[in-house]
Structure formats: C-alpha cells, structure tokens
Image (cartoon, rainbow, N blue to C red; front, side, top):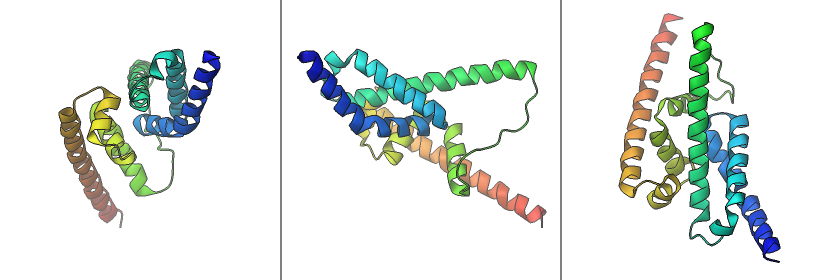
Length: 176
C-alpha cells in the first residue's frame, strides 16, 4: 500500500508542478523542446528519489534545483556541440524563433547572454516571483548570493537592452 500512496503523492506533485518546472526550464534554456526534455528528466530523477523527497521540507525547491542543474548541463552540452560544429562548418546567423513581439525577443536574447547563475536568479525571482529564500533553496546557494546575482544580472540585462536599443535606433536612422 505504501507504493500506491507514494505513487499517488508523486502523481499529485507532477500534476501541480510540471507546467511550472517546464516553464522554468524554457526560461533557462530558451528552447521549447529542451524545456520539455529537461522537465521530464527532472521528474524522472525526482520519482527515483521520491521515497526520500516526499518527506522533505521543500520538495518543490529541490525540483527547481534539479531543473536548473539539468538546464545548465544541457546548455553546456549544446555550447560544446556548437563549438565542434563551428570547427568544421561556417555558420550563418541564427534566426530567433518565437513570438513576433520585439521586446520579448530582445529580453529573451539578453537573458541568453547572462551567465547561468545570474540568469537563473533573475528568472526565478522575477518570472516566477520566488522569494530570495526560495530561490536560494532551488539553486543551492546562499540568500546573499541570490541578492548579488539578481542585482548584477538585472544591471547586466539593462545594459544589454540599452545597447541593443541604441543600436536599433542608429540602424533605423541609417535605413531612412
């Protein structure tokens, strides 16, 4: 009967949190397919440890941390693969796929330029509206590190977006 209770609890956890975990993965990786894979892999890892996690004080924080770690691994792997491909083929500019809303595209691109920890802190604090404490729990870092990384990440995002906007204005004037 314990297995059935654990299975039911995990099913409830899955139903309540899968969409959020997939959204977190998407915001960290910037890729829909990767987000689904990362969220699924995270939930498989959680299921394998569910007997211990179900008694944990913050299983959702642990789940967010697993998603963040898997997203980081996926980004690193993709970066290594792109470098290998670049050695053999010259690449043209990549197209950005997504909504045609310029601001969303700009912010997504700017987020992609942030180092992973800054990006994760900004996404968890502002896109998911997590407290500093919950963000720290999810990423396995101190609250002070969350404050610092979020502040630095937001400042860097602002700088990237201002540079991009000023470049767009200059380009717009030239094309007239």
